[in-house]
Image (cartoon, rainbow, N blue to C red; front, top):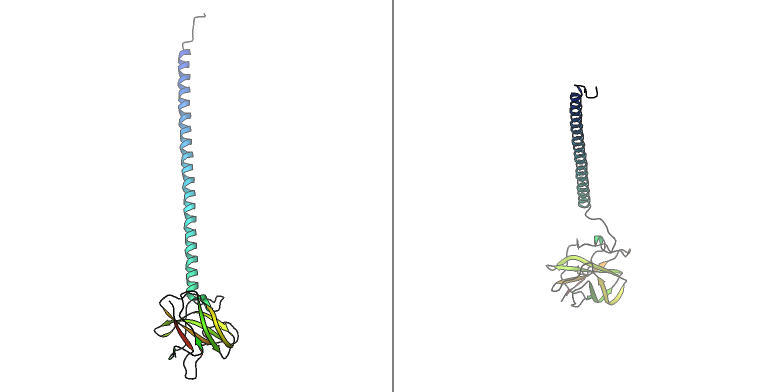
Amino acid sequence: MDNIQDPNYKNNEENNQFESFDFSEEDNSFSENVEEEMSDLGDNEDFEESRRSNKGIVISAVIIILILIGAYWFFISNPEIEKEGPIANNEEIYSEVESKIKNEFSSLLSVSKQLAGDKVIISSVELENDSWIAINEKVNGELGNILGALWLPAGKHSDVEVELLRSTESGKSYFAVIRSDNGDKEFDHEIDLPLEDENGNILVSSFEVL
């Protein structure tokens, strides 16, 4: 009785092993599918993040370009924005007065040769009224850019310095010009015009820079 075995015992054991093996394979396949799906999900998230980042960069670039274009057109449409200082814009300014320079040396104004620099020394000047002494470039014998201006009260003055917004250059000639003052002691090249003598000559003195 003890040696009698169930003839189906061995077959049942093999079937159990087979069924166990099949379940393990299915479990591994399921795990692999989950991992692949998770990997695909991660790739999609990276792609979306990259796309959002690139979109942000493009938007920022467009905004910067629009700001630069707006600033450019603002300054183009407003070329004469006033700044503080005796001469508007602290830029080169051309005299709009028709030149009447027939005598380059007035007896009322004397300027000697001097070294290049950011100031001009007026040797002597005699003023009937409060006036401005302006320094102009000399261009083909005519008044060029105004480089600086100094207000002086009526009377005689000697060795006064006119500070310049742009330095004189060696080898060039310049004009010192007596200009009127409208009483506000603020230089305006369109209002404070060059003074003339009885013959209609502008009161100037030409000088060279060494």
